[in-house]
Length: 255
Image 1: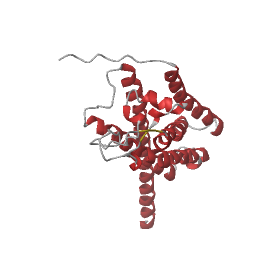
Image 2: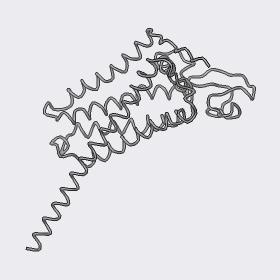
Image 3: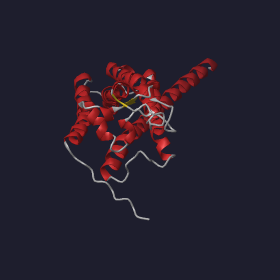
Image 4: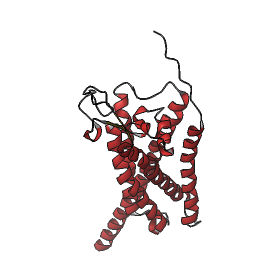
């Protein structure tokens, strides 16, 4: 049995535009942190701000455009009942938005954002179509995780106890909620592929596998995991302090 020949990456204008777009959002998040946070902000809290602002921009601008194309970019299809449809597990009678006459997704668009997702779809074909699992997750990501990331940035900007290093209960609660959701969303994005032989993923191409699939997706594993670690430490410290204060108050009563 012959081994499949690895496909060669096509580095063109769209590839460069897509990578630079992602980089520009990170640079924008850093510059806004310099603009909006005091110079005395601890490094850990500045990184938290940059990450959550970058996260927010990705959700709103990139993934928001993905949803736009899923709902508003389409091509007409044949009316044959056995026409294979990307929203269908069996290939028939299951249609995105219950419309068998249209195929939705960035694959059928020509705008810069459509081309951006067409580029990523070279690594994961589902992102060029209106895949039901991906669309369902992205609805939560854009309309829940995006605003929540923006709210976390606002909490960090306001500072308060968090900026002095003690940590705000409200801040650490919401970053925990968001980080847990990010990790769950990442798992649910790829678990269907792992359980079905990764038929939609191009893992024969080094750039698509290690840059598009591994690096960009692992950012949403590494950083949320670090956030949870920091949140655990802040919450553990807060409860220990409360317990210590309660114990000291009890001892004073007994004296």
